Length: 289
Length: 156
Image (cartoon, rainbow over the protein chains, first blue to last red):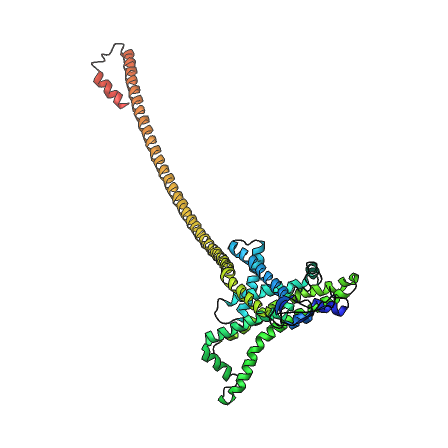
């Protein structure tokens, strides 16, 4: 593992496992031997250093982020589907209780935040809440645990919390953003939506450009704030966990135990905030003036 | 910390998860929950109705009881009256019977007295005849003097 100094250790832990395309003529530096090899043609490969991951540009995947988020999503759907199939209207048993509590919690969020009529919003909110909660929960696994296993399997980098990757959070918030646009146009019509963007907050033709800039900015801020809030909180928490992991092992528990307990709250809270705000934004998209 | 295709992959995964949840997860769970809510609501309203019914039934029962008591009282009253009447009537009968018996007894006594007097008269007549015979020292022809003897007996 290329992690000799604390700085390297931290950087190493904050690098995703990247599979991407390196251009022809790229000079690859081996992290252990510092040998330089020049690629003859453009090729898809795993990045061996952070620099390589950066140089791959947009044509790359974070395999760990995608893998873990999809795994968590499938875990969520499997459990909930299992309960849904066996759901009885009689006395619910253990797992059904948990699932129903979650569903009721989400129903409350949607009832309070959403004022339109749309049967998709509540299950959408449930998906967001549980999925983000599960992804965030991965943070409570000690920072070196799974990366060490991955390293033993020959993977240089491994970051298991998808919400500490901006790609992970932006992926969800962009989905929400597209839904906001879709429902705005569906409910208000393309003309109505354009009118709303042009004539609010100042209802005067001379101020249309000003309104447009303001409203479009406001619209774009929604996914940005959703994604960055979640990412920022999770990333910061992760960095603190990594910093604690640098300390001598016998003192770590004095810090990471309270921090982990605190994160039980943060994990739930961030999932809740993301869901609530997404529901409120979607409610605004449904409001026809 | 690089923005790359992961973003799109994540968005696609999100879309698929939401689709699955909307289609296969949400409806059965909420349906079961709503069915249970309905069951509970029905149960509660049934309980309410039952307690109302119970109250009504109790009211009715107490009314019935009251009515029955009144009827019973009326019946007892009637029975008492009837009994009194019967007692009265039987007393009357007894008195009448008694009077009749006394009357009969009196009549019998009277008759016996008459008979006894007749018998006595006859005996007196015989004694008188015997005395007269003694006095006259001759027999008296009872046949010849029967008219006179009868007269005497009647006078006694």
